[in-house]
Image 1 (cartoon, rainbow, N blue to C red):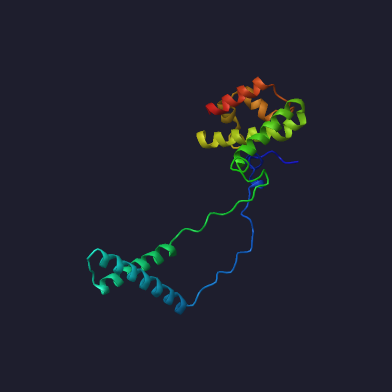
Image 2 (image 1 turned 135 degrees about the vertical axis):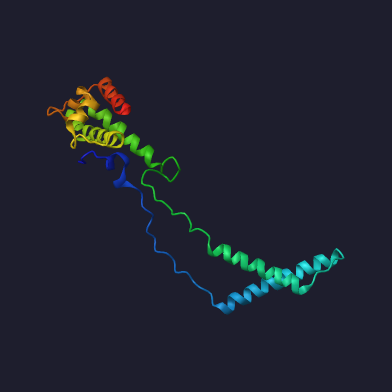
Length: 192
């Protein structure tokens, strides 16, 4: 069983990693083939543009046209060189790969809803899973808002939390709480 920490709440242990597929070797063409291909593309484009301009009774210097096409080809090459890498492909164990099935936050919330439902009838499950997470969340809120934790300044933390929430989180006889009690404690935590 898990200790019910924030890692379990947000599913850090189950974060879907990028699929580890062996990347295909990038085949690099030789410089001569690349230059020949670019020269062919530039030559064909120059012929088509020249023919189109002659059909319209317009002319342009062939040197200027070739220079513009070379500049355009260099610009395209530069843009390809700084293009971002492709987005990683995530593998989903949750479902078929639809966006809803791959939503890790939704899966974590669903898992915690099930844990909370079972915790109402099983005090041990409540003590193992729910209370440690509530205590961790409370400590984090105290640290962010007041610069303390329950362990670093217990007296001040008890004042901020109130006796009811303090005893529910740190009492030795951790019993399962009623839904309205949990709601009251969560409201108190949100007001921190």
